[in-house]
Image (cartoon, rainbow, N blue to C red; front, side, top):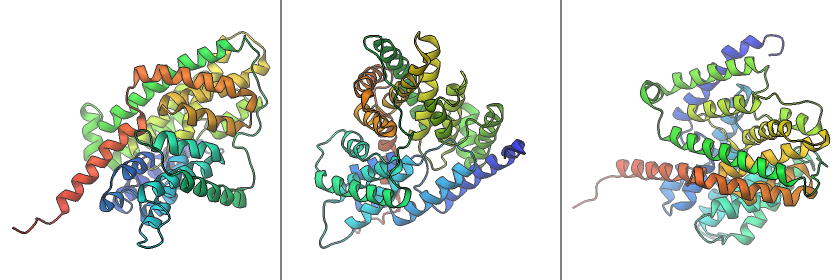
Length: 393
């Protein structure tokens, strides 16, 4: 690809189209992130409805198709698929009639938390995700089950990948009271941007306007190919910086070995949206961190201070955009703190997450994943009722 970058104009459309076709024909239920599907399954008491979101086939398809999407250059993450895979694995345990270790709902919640913990090597973040996101509107009861699942997921991650920190160790810190301005700037800007982007994703999931919407509905595979082509064009114009999760670019910026272009944030938002509306399997959680890094980089250019503080502002941008987009502030600052192994930034991260969350709620009243979960649940129940045989009279 580096020697012939124009090949992306062939690989990306073909890859997007193939992932869209496979997810629709062979692996229904794998479309999109995977987190809304896990939430929808946890909200239902009907086993037939849950099996439309969680199964061995879906878990297998999610692994293969997410990898295919990443190889095609799609800006997707592994955290959403990891949640659906973890929930599917634990849901299979719920099928046991005897010696069941917990209720079906608790097992799904525990598997979802384990998926986040394994995806980023963030065990505390996985537990907080289970509490704050999976049990947002009900009491969290899967205490020991979630803890056990996260521990086993962490041990497996250590066995396969070793003890690593996702972004490495970031020793950057903010002085006080000067650090108040980066916190407020990132919190306010991240809240507006994350809340606005969340509303855009929710509106896009309900349907695109005009002829574009008709094209997406009538020819979904061709529409996915068009999204892949647009992703390839943006990747070419950005020098390849917008492909994938954005992990390498964000890590280099945090280490100070590279800088993010001013328009990196905008370009990354565009390719995330293209992957989302194409409905290929893949999450938006990890790419959102790259958008946040781009936001922090742009804000750092406007704030007076030493260059050494730029990495700290990048971290604040990450937590601000993530907390605003997901409206899960505690999960966001815990995960970012674990990813950077930087406990000195705990209070600034907490403050930024709170500010961003407050601004985001005024822009997008309904949290992203739950706004996507409820329509998915209604569609699954509708499909079940349509195929159910009529009752005898």
